[in-house]
Amino acid sequence: MRKNKSSKSWIIQQHRDKYFKEAKSSGYRSRSAYKLLELNEKFKFLNNCHSVIDLGSSPGGWSQAIKRNTKNCKILAIDIKEMEKINGIDFLRCDFLEDNSKEKILKFFNDKADVLVSDMAANTTGNKDLDCIRTNLLCSEVINFSRFVVKKGGTVIAKLFNGYDFLDVKKLAEKKFEKVNFFKPNSSKDFSKETYIHCKGFKTL
Ligand SMILES: C[S@@+](CC[C@H](N)C(=O)[O-])C[C@H]1O[C@@H](n2cnc3c(N)ncnc32)[C@H](O)[C@@H]1O
Image 1 (cartoon, rainbow, N blue to C red):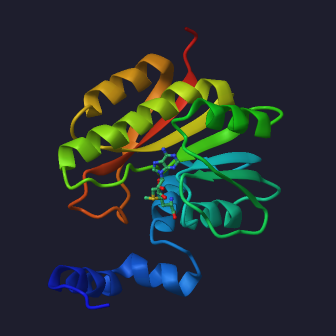
Image 2 (image 1 turned 135 degrees about the vertical axis):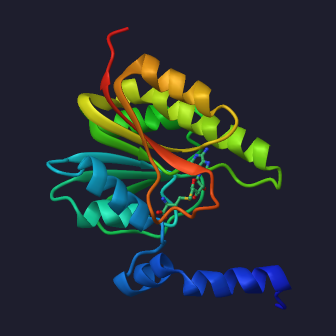
């Protein structure tokens, strides 16, 4: 298949990218794995962690990084797209926004999970504002759902965009959690509005 000029230059840029190269040589399926590693370096949520939900897991870089940095940890990866098998990780292919997907997640853990991470991003439409709204909606859904599936002292981390609805998502998180922080890893591209919210300590409603 012939590639056009912009897709060729995207491929060249990817191959020059430090995290892309490191991911290749370390056997990570995506450069995103480094975002998870940086988030963990900052918030240390994988220390003594025995159960993790990885939302938006495909192709599997975050799941691999979680597996490599935990021991005896039950990991449930979820994505609307297929994900190639990773030993020791359970995978559910479903749309997180559907109620029956949430029921499946709840059933998977007898008790609640220690950590919930979400790198979910809505498919791009070409309209940046709409993409931002749709990804931030996923983030709000994660925040709302976390109370039912994350332990009292647990951690919630989710991707969101610093654009439309950002302040609404921040307000929602501050209503539900005692501690709310934001962190943009170095491995997240500068031009991207992507950032991550870190939440701890459910408030009593
Ligand atoms: C940036 S990628 C995740 C990369 C992954 N963390 C890794 O390290 O390989 C975002 C993922 O979110 C998934 N996604 C988007 N909307 C979703 C939804 N409603 N339910 C489940 N997964 C979703 C996409 O299919 C995509 O695979």
